[in-house]
Image (cartoon, rainbow, N blue to C red; front, side, top):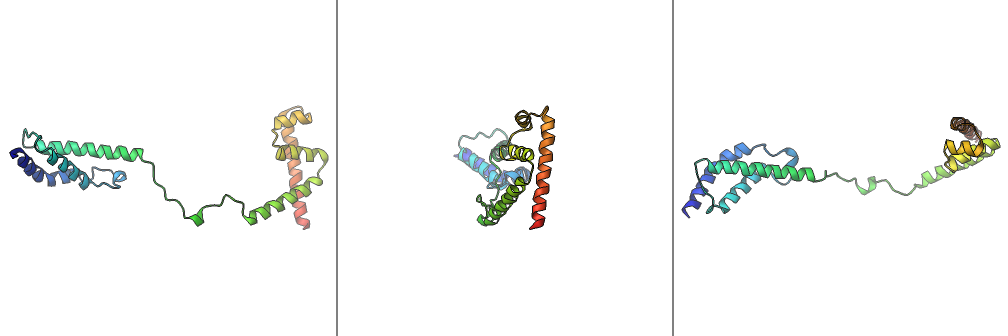
Length: 178
């Protein structure tokens, strides 16, 4: 019992020094629920719980123990922060984009598709076939070269880009006549 009261007196005497020493030891990223003062208090409580078993060998034993215990607690807090995922505030429901197509987008899509189909009709048959192969069937230049008999992949690529340019001009011309 005598040892316990001696340890209590030493802890009480060390607390102001330990609080000053501990000030700003805990990184700001780790200061969520715990603050440095909370950690100092936790260390002091741990010593007081072990008061009967705590052996005081010299006057600075309590302070040294508290500093080491505090350093370990700070390390534990930092480790927890590193393991914890970063919290991100989610936007309000009205700010979330809808996975569904809006009526305006659907209308625009239908209108663009109609212009595309009308422009296809005005292309030469080979240009129409190249555009359909590239856009609708998603064929690569290499596949188009094989299918249409072009000597190289680059030749097929050039033919497709010219057909797409003609398609673009037809779409623009159709838009002007509206």
